[in-house]
Image 1 (tube, rainbow, N blue to C red):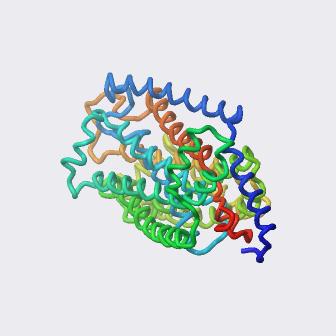
Image 2: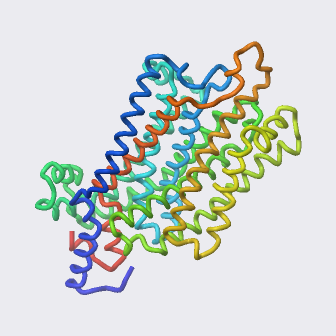
Image 3: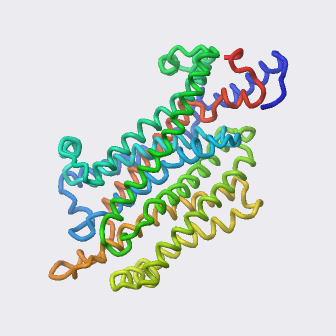
Length: 448
């Protein structure tokens, strides 16, 4: 924290921070309206496509008896992966006392909440009879990985909401006290209700710090559990490509990479759109680039394990699976994912010149795209290579090519997650006002 300043200096600094961070909350730009309009249009088309899927059944997709999971489950795994960034940034890095995460911790939590919410929705989309969803809760079996998947997803949504909401309390009190004349009455009433009567007493801050710390510790095992259980959906089978004991840590390390990429993209566009260069600094991108290298190297290790071990044993089913990935039908997607989504991001991020805002944003896009396609090639080729011969069935059972309905619905669900994030960024300060002011030497309790 900066040196002690006079009360007048603190007031000037606090007012500048408050106005800079709350500027996006007080007005809606044309660009924001256009972006929301585009997302709503995509969602509307996806709803139309989902209506056809509900009416005609899953036959409108390319999923059949053998490939019973497709783009939907690949996207589910992707959502769960990206959502783990809240735990990585806020809990792991935050508990280590790294101050550089303060301006981006809320961005990570907003991404985590939006994506984990959609992880639950995409599961419903994948169901041919979504009206039977309650049976999972009524007749769920403890032996079922799917039951535990839903349990940890629900728990993670709850903790993510608390971890986003509780640190917002001081900022909601600031917004209630300072924005009454600058925003519509309905919006101010929301802040007034959500602030829960926060007045910023020393005792309130003491309780808040303790509660947040407990949540940060609690979210680590829950976040690890959510992706470990997700990995068990695959690893608990004997299928080539899935029959592995490393899938738990493999999925978790991959999740850290996907989430870091998503945060880099969000950091760049939020900083540029809301003119927050003073808060989301070049150093923020530099440190996120270093973090991306670290988690990517761990993920690279598990990627090597994934292919070297079955390649060394070279069982018949594994040989067919590896051939399909390395030189077969999915070779282009596989190598593009490995090189463009992992090797190149690691190599480029090693250089400080590349750890600047614009290059890191491009690297983030490559990482996120690579993360989605990686989940696709984890799911689909393995299902195509059943141990039993695929015979006496139509040709479409031998392969999987997503239909337009599947692609449209998947893009629509992704658009919903982006829309949720977009709304959260607009309604609430994307950078913590009280923590930022505190780091600049402001006695926030006297300036609320």
